Length: 333
Image (cartoon, rainbow, N blue to C red; front, top):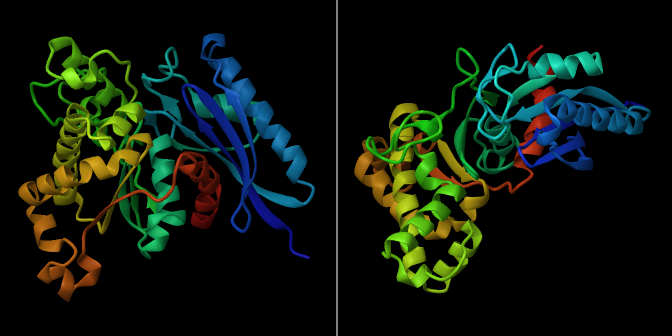
């Protein structure tokens, strides 16, 4: 009887640490959820991670063969070294050699990638990429910030130093809001969950959103209010959609990929943003105008159609992508 192969994936977040065992046939076999103990220091977080990995290995290696361990981490991440550079959600981790810290504890090599890249990989292999029979896509993940992953021919595009896919820090408005990355007007400052809450609070403080005054808002509650007809809440998502449309137009013009997906928590408000997104796409990207679904070029050449869609996978995308990484790595060898 052939032994089934499995992997262990780690989704390292600033709040939670998720570690799972996975097979292609059965999906997630078991997930361990832990708080990310940032206050205890980075070594303590790595200890927690590796203890959970060993726990899963002890449970599943008797009946399965471990292909490898994949880890998705907030970036910026230098590859192939595996060193973090000033990650905004992991204070005190600047210059930390995460790969070496994990491998020295486990006595095995691990596959390391940015969290946005692994989410994009999962979307390509298990989500909309699979549904549409496409193996290349660009993904924007709208959460606390804006992540970006690029998948080409089924593989993560890392770039020369592992830092490809930083569209969240591409400038949308040159004289816009200062960003922690050091620039101004980045997409992250206008189209993340954090950004829409900031926009609501700013409008309340300046008296330009009277329908929002008197309440404390989250991105989720703002979307609910917009759905219920609150015009000030609707305008916030219109503005976020405009920033996303500008960003996507530049990505379409630059990459000419067949599929662009928007995921992350804020993507649940896709229906509030999509009209503005597509308005900007049509206005700013001649590539999109030529290749949009239903265009003459797309009708003649379906493989050249540009699709822009909400992501299919939900909050497990990052964890699933980390689990897929060892299989993708082994297929290269």
